[in-house]
Amino acid sequence: MTRFAEHGVVVTGAAKGLGQAIVQAFLQEGARVAALDLDHEALQQTWHGASLQPTVCLAVDVRQHDALDAALEQAQQALGTLDVMVANAGIGLRVPALDIDAADFERVIDTNLNGLFYCNRLAAKRMPATGGAVVNMASVMGLSGGIFPHAVYQASKGAVVNLTRALALEWGPRNIRVNAVAPTFVRTPLTEGLFADAQRKQAVMATAALGRLPEPADIAHAVLFLASAQARCITGHTLAVDSGYLAR
Ligand SMILES: NC(=O)c1ccc[n+]([C@@H]2O[C@H](COP(=O)([O-])OP(=O)(O)OC[C@H]3O[C@@H](n4cnc5c(N)ncnc54)[C@H](O)[C@@H]3O)[C@@H](O)[C@H]2O)c1
Image (cartoon, rainbow, N blue to C red; front, side, top):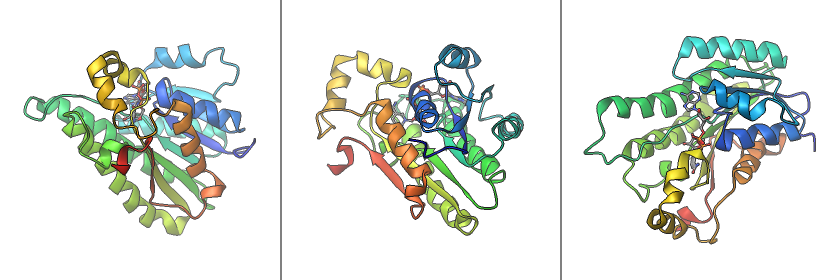
C-alpha cells in the first residue's frame, strides 16, 4: 500500500517502542519520515542499516522549544513537505501522588503535555495551505483513573485528550485534523518493569476483555488510519486501542 506516498511525516519518540513501530508503518506505506528522539544513540541503533530508513533522524528533546523548532525546520527541508505530525514522545512515572516530588511532576507534564503542544503548534505552522493531520499519543490513562497510582501521568494524558479537541476546533478551518490514539498497556521499553512483575502483569491482563494486549503494530495501524485520507471527516477524536479496557 502507498497511502502516504509524497507525504512528509514527523514522528517524535521514534527510537523505540511505539514510535519505532509507527515510523516503520509509515515507511511501509510510502511516506518520507523524519524520526525525532531525545536518545541519539538509540535512534542510530534502531535506524542505521534498517531495510526501510527514515529520510532523516534528528536528536531533539521536545521540551526544548527552540531546538524543536530548529529540528522541525530541518525535517521540513529534508522531507520537502510536512503533512503529518505524530506527537508520540512521552514518559511515565509510577509514583504515588503523596510521594512524587515537584521536579518529577514537572518533568512528566513538561514532556507529555507541554512538549506535545509545541510539537502540534510548530508542525501546524509548517503544514501546507491545503491542510494536514496531527495524531497525538494519549492513553487509556487519560480516559480513566488507571489501575496503579500514577496520577501525574493520568493528568498529562487527560490533558492530551482535551487539547486534541481544542486544537481540532481551532485548526479545522485550516483543514488540519487533530486526533489522538489511546493505547492500553503495550509491551515496550516503557512498560518492561510492569510486565516483569507477575502480580502487576496479572492485574494488567485482567483489564483486557479480549484476553490479549495490543502489539506496537496495532497502535501504528490506528495512527496511520487517523492520519490518512480515509479519516478525512474525523477530527478531535481519541481512538482507544484498548482490548476492552474502557468497556468496563
Ligand atoms: N507502552 C504503553 O503501554 C503505552 C500505553 C499508552 C500510551 N503510551 C504512550 O505512547 C508513547 C510512546 O510510549 P512507548 O511505550 O513507546 O515508550 P518508550 O519509552 O518505549 O519510547 C519512548 C521514546 O520517546 C523518547 N522520548 C522520551 N522523552 C522524550 C523527549 N523529551 N523528547 C524526545 N523524545 C523523548 C524516548 O527516548 C523513547 O525513544 C508515550 O507517549 C506513552 O505515554 C504507551
